[in-house]
Length: 162
Image (cartoon, rainbow, N blue to C red; front, side, top):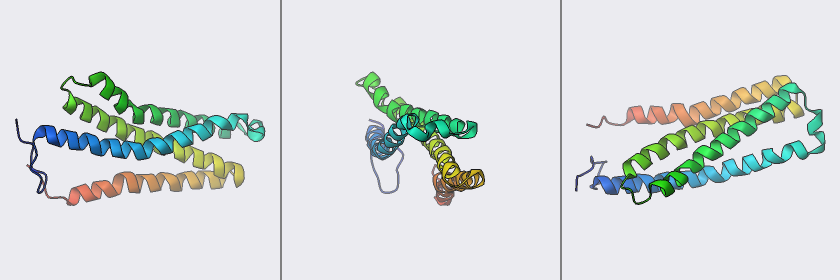
């Protein structure tokens, strides 16, 4: 069996590394799947509320954007489970981990899009358009900094691997 590149003090085979990567990814997906499913469920109930008909065109658009992103996030964050079922016992762990990583990253982007548009909608309805735009901008910056910029800064500070 071929050895995987050393990751710090880890001495594991490629298969062991892929298994560890898969298990770590599943743990991350469990956290995000719950949140996105709650958000999507909440969004699905909104059109049945009395005041929904009072929304203006921009608010309805924000609602539909938020719901669309939530549905997309749900599909992407659950996709690794489906792929695992399809690829089970096919010796395709490397392809599965690679696919799941891309689906999870895309799903996180969709989740951020859903939350940003929902933030706009809620602030717009409660406080007004300017506050809605401001809140959506702040949410966008929070996601960009915490989900992209800081992880990239941390990665850049790591020693270069072979």
